[in-house]
Image 1 (cartoon, rainbow, N blue to C red):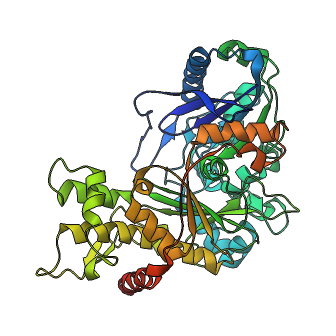
Image 2: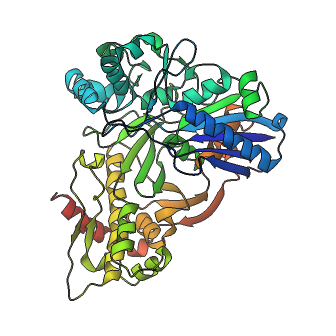
Image 3: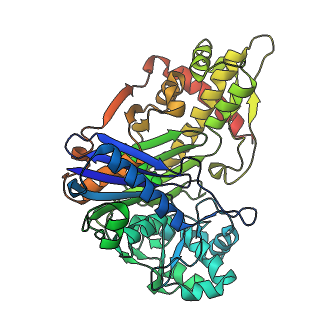
Length: 493
């Protein structure tokens, strides 16, 4: 028996087939092979054609079926992960009315800010747990004002994953987790956010039927089955946004657990067991995949723009040409914890939400020309990235989270022993590194939704744990001193 997972990204669509018994991925493929087109008609705009996602999904499905040799009859369920915060509009015939406005489009910022100021910060934060910001609801408000002919023809709005599920099953539905990421969910009243719908003048009929994240959300139609080479009637049993799904892929379900990534930018996604919010709105809070009315599980999302991009800048500009990242790590290991007094603030990749949308730039502090070498700078860069994570985790702990475990994929900055050891040392959390990805996680999510696995622990029992990094208690004081010095510079910006 096999499970099929899709990950609908803005760069590509990936499909993976997972053997439900062994938990191993037997085939995976992604399309297009070059980065997918993002349409930018004006500065700050970002759109994609949903039909392109479907076309690439068909190619990826064909590839994994051919590579694996799995019979279509042996696929028990389908799961979907998708790029968050996008807006797809369809008419009564399920035809797309305009290109999707995707997550990195910023045209709706003024609409969200006006709503936040008009409705009041306390109302928005206590009910939505966020500012309406640049999320899906505000994007719809932009269409309502600027494209009234399109708006008048909208039958249903949906997120990118809802669109793919509709194409597979012919049914239009969504989830509480999806509605929350679009700012359509009222956590205090456990219902669609009527006050925001009324403020924007949206009719409730635009919201699709709500299904549990782990549940049968429709079955593959004859038309979709013919296009994809799948069996008609195969159930779709899971869908989630990419960051909640990344957490699921790393088996992060419980309060105090964190899923983290550290590529060009960095993400810290923690699970909170209580309804709470950051009064400064430096993090975003959405319903996690296992959130229900009876069990509070909120995903607190912190995105830091300036993380791995600093390390790559150091590689390009500080170290000699031809030096690899692994060799950089060896060079950094020659410097002591705290980098001999150098502190680097890594915020050189645009405005940071964690800093209340300020663009402070990167700064290098404490260099002594008589003492420091490039080894110290390399280490200080990695420590500065870690300390930005710690700063964000401190915000989460201020919201009532008790962070004790960090799950991460064995990739990017987490390949560096110094990065890992510093993160464990300064947070006091155990770090577990895994071999997984979003499409594999979506497949296993489908297994939970179909009842093939009784719970997440069974689904992820075979997850490959590659390493465990425990906090180095012997050097706890050194890590803390380095962080406090870094924090002193932070407090000056």
